[in-house]
Amino acid sequence: MPTLDEAGLKGFNLGTWFGVLAPATTPKDIVTRLNTEMVKIIHSPDFRQRMADIGAEPIGNTPEQMAQQIKDDTERFAKLVKEAKVSIE
Image (cartoon, rainbow, N blue to C red; front, top):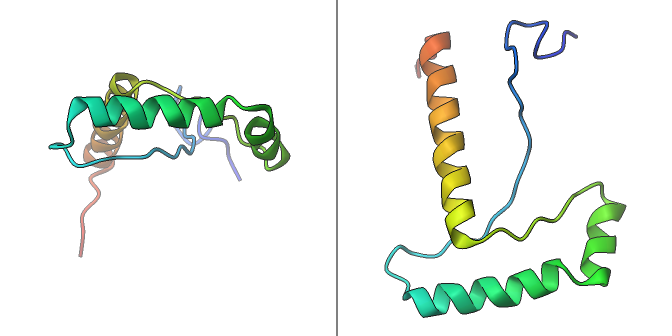
């Protein structure tokens, strides 16, 4: 099986990530508190070890960083779909 580069997708990096999302109307102080508490857990030695055991790398981004990642990935995949002329039947 060819690599992504060999298949013509030069520089394409495909990874898996998980995030926790809240409705857009969630008050900012609630989002901040949820993020603070989740980051504490993500950076705890026990959680980090559990993630390492399954080959995952916990990050713990800010809400703004996560929003940017979603935006960037959406644009990247939209471009890929357009260039490949993917259609739904």
